[in-house]
Amino acid sequence: MPYKVANYKNGKIYKIEHLDKPELVYIGSTTMFNRRKSNHKRICNNQPDSQYNLKLYDMMRLNGGWDAFKMMIIKEFPCNNKTELLIEEEKHRKEYQATLNQNRAHITKEEAKQYYRLNKEQYKEYYEANKEQFKEYYEANKEYKQEYQKKYNKVNKEHIKQNYETNKDKIKEYQKDYYQANKLKKLIIQKEEQNILTGSPTETETDDEEADEPQIIEVLGNGVKFEIQIY
Figure 1 (tube, rainbow, N blue to C red):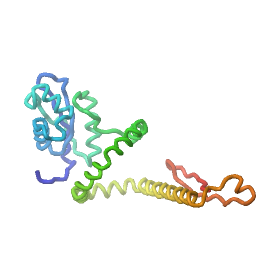
Figure 2: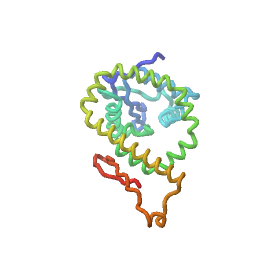
Figure 3: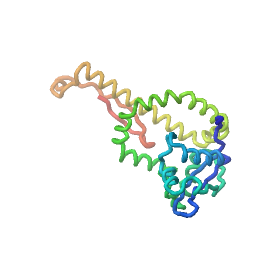
Figure 4: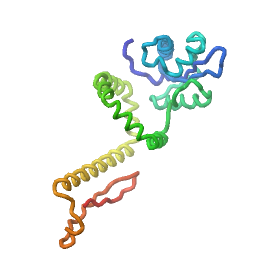
């Protein structure tokens, strides 16, 4: 199929429902309804496809196949970006109590942080076990992603500009936080490398001489400025 950048002004929320079992419901979102419908049908019936064993398609095949379901638009939802569309999808997923959705459509940043904190060890283990595949995937899709980003920026030029103007203070604050955090990180690494090469001074070694003055740097944390001493 020819490459096409999503136009979120054509956003739609849709439902897939079993003809005789209304409890079997899936909620999704798209900007190209006919293409999405065609893709759902193709994946359901195409065993070599990487998504063939997802819950939605397994349940379809166990309950009469694609022809036993209907797919319909339940809401036209013109919006500005994918996040807005997914937030709306998540509202409808909850409203319809969609049993065939394998995952939530959207979670907030705070929910994502909390989930990561609870599962960070599993994330690390998964990454270590699959880092070569991640690297191969990145290399194989690098040009595609760059081309997509160029086209997305072109199509959404005005929205990106407007978003920057609306949030420029937050963006500048984030950039400042990022800079300070990296400054601290580099300083700590530098101090650790010095200690490895020269050996860290013990209390007895510094008793008879004046210790170096601590280096004080300012760091921003959650918008609050505080000082950290590096010895």
